[in-house]
Image (cartoon, rainbow, N blue to C red):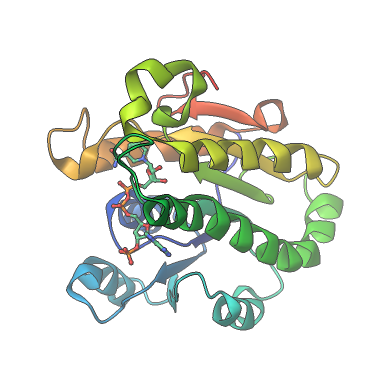
Length: 249
Ligand SMILES: NC(=O)c1ccc[n+]([C@@H]2O[C@H](COP(=O)([O-])OP(=O)(O)OC[C@H]3O[C@@H](n4cnc5c(N)ncnc54)[C@H](OP(=O)(O)O)[C@@H]3O)[C@@H](O)[C@H]2O)c1
């Protein structure tokens, strides 16, 4: 095991894998020190699980109200929230799933998927870097050399459906937006290699929100967290599944 995350920003924490990730990160025997959990509708029914977790772990979880990726509020809050130790892991896990073909999918549907799956993560990553740079220096100067999830890292939860290699079987998802997130992560890997910021793309398996999926959310997230803990500079820019198996781009 290389290293555990300490301070995490989770933009899609209301439900699904994002919520399960919050749960496991704070309830593990080695919990994260701080978790910023974003939620678009904190008062809504969907957010009940997150509200309960935040009540149970008030010293660790801070719920940040998120508009449709209007992140100014996060930025304003983040500096004071993370303090001197800084934020070290951003998990890009928001998405909308598209289904169809080029002929049946509307431009609006694709625009929504691009906004949520690529442009939102790109925006939050760029803005977070403005904060990262504050503590990147201290992380590289004081910490052990190399890249780990206990130092600056961006983990994008994407999908096998985004793989060019599986397009024959997966094209009915019309997964252009998720494929874009993969490419965004690869480009950022190169751009920030010199700054020792670790990037990875992870496939959580096909869990389908518990309805007939291959595995359930707890198993998927357990695997994802274990893979994150094991990442080092040797894996920056990789595409792995929740068991650490290399996925084809
Ligand atoms: N489900 C699967 O079988 C599966 C398979 C392969 C890969 N994945 C990957 O796993 C990750 C999580 O999937 P999931 O099934 O847990 O997703 P999910 O249950 O559908 O949750 C999606 C999350 O994204 C947020 N979100 C959606 N649109 C947004 C927007 N415009 N602005 C801000 N937030 C937005 C949602 O917030 P609200 O609650 O406010 O809508 C929610 O927190 C995704 O990155 C996906 O690529 C999932």
